[in-house]
Image 1 (cartoon, one colour):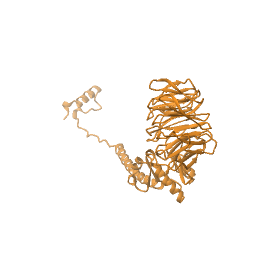
Image 2 (cartoon, helix red, strand yellow):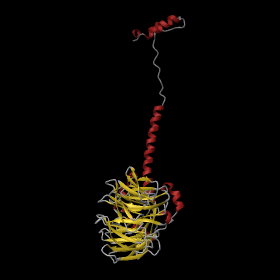
Image 3 (cartoon, rainbow, N blue to C red):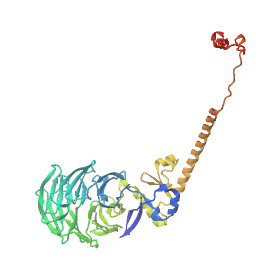
Image 4 (spheres, rainbow, N blue to C red):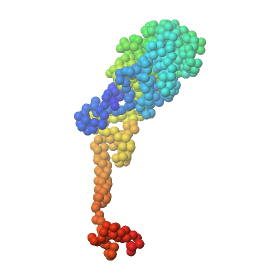
Length: 473
């Protein structure tokens, strides 16, 4: 369960679905009375079930079919897979060491690659770990290029390692101009490779002839790189908190801005058909509008240290891995609509805004019920009315109305139960009655009647004759 908090920067609202522990509704009215009307304890909604770790989360990635989200975290080191249409956890991969980087290798989550800091590259399938490959050189980051089936890794030895998954072996490496590669990216359009190094070099490579095409000195350590959807622009994040946007046809940056926190950039992403550029450091996320000459759009911060963020494609939803136990989720309506699997966020935002206007706490004195539960208690006719607020797979209903519906249904059930009990008791009483056994009239046996003067032998003979059907009328 979570609660919603809104922040406003540059007149753009960001709704934080903040992760906090919730009091289960099973504790009943007594516990709810103790809570009272405290907004931080009352106003809670649930998003993705078990979207958390016992320690912290490190990275979050979304599959290309937009149906799965994977998150790495600790402790113990794990990679959790979540199904977005069902808003629930699918499986958990236990890893020996928290991966430095991982990615989906297919459009769905059937194949996944994870790079560990101990010179190991792990391949996962839906059944678990498939193979663990030893690397000849320590690598820091990798990217998968589907057209060539190459896993391209930035190493610490002036080269880019290439592991071909179709051949199942390492192929010719790409020589680099600098020593330690921090990050690498590849364009889905023209397969151009870009790598950032710790000495400030940003180098481009052609995968066809395995050589360097151009290099740009940015002056500070490059920590993140990313291509846009068209493949003509590339963004680079520096250790100083600066972000530079290049056109691949020019060595002069088209845009440069700073987070002003002197902390390294840990994530870069283009959003909504390259209209926005998102960047994050350990403090928060800044968003710039590229269609408006690179002007500042909005920003937000997280309470815990932010390790990685990724926006859901073509929407205003953003996932963030932080040092908090739960994975953070933010929603910016002006950035884009809510995804189909989280369409309930639109209604939620309207309720939050109504709360801010009239001061009524969100979902105060309301209870969540499923459609089946509503039908069971005879409240199906309320579906579609203002008495119910649709939410996920059910509805929110006022507690007083819920109690009235349940009490009416329980009253009918009580009457049926009492009537059934009376009938059962009546049947048991009828069965328990003692029926008087009437004795048959005594027959006149005449000479066959046993008298006191008869001997035992004679009496026995008379009894046999009495019981003989021949002598019975």
